[in-house]
Image (cartoon, rainbow, N blue to C red):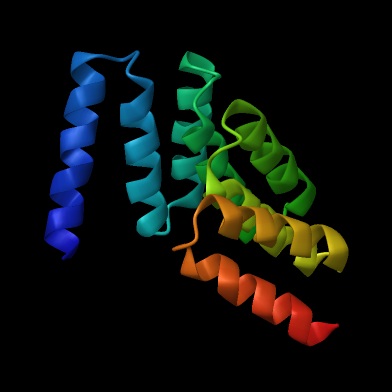
Length: 138
């Protein structure tokens, strides 16, 4: 599996070499680097994607995940909110925002975000788990 990950990374790097302005390639590479635990490199690639195209919600989501993992919750929240602003029909940023808000003890806001995520994507299992966890802590 590690070999396939390395191969995928080299393919994204080749895409960037061929077209350095391809924002989606930076998002993909950022995700793969985060899978390898290379958070700083991953963050830099998400930031480059945003620099190239500030309207890509998935870049803000990916960056939010990494910031959240680093404990930078306020920054993560800002990135999830930006993703929602760009694409209010995506369930993932609502779910991720719910998780961060519940970590901060903002239960009502967390519940509302998990419920919105479920409404947008009834098959997003993580949103049900997050909502269940928050409700059980009340």
